[in-house]
Length: 125
Image 1 (cartoon, rainbow, N blue to C red):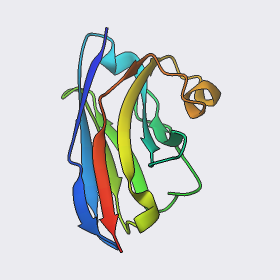
Image 2 (cartoon, helix red, strand yellow):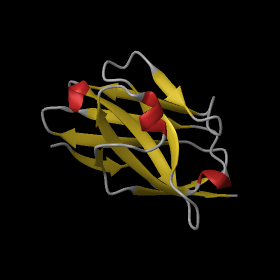
Image 3 (cartoon, helix red, strand yellow):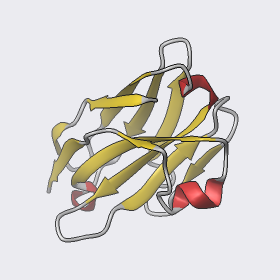
């Protein structure tokens, strides 16, 4: 079992930055691929970024490439999402998720084993 708790969301002006954190509990965090997803009002949940268990490989959606960065600290059981140059269209609830292994196509489709409760990010234009 992995329990995930996101934090760091809030209101920010367009062009600003936020860093989200996802604290994980459970023995399998360090062996899990981690991802961030988001869901805007009236829209389907979408993949944002993912990172392999060892932090060596990251995968980024085209919509956030060059602006968002995922990282992890396995010693702290935490994964981060650094969001820069935020746009109004980045407004959404952001979810952290975990999956054993490193099946990136499944991760991109949102096929994850565990999900956090989400944190709201609102970007004002």
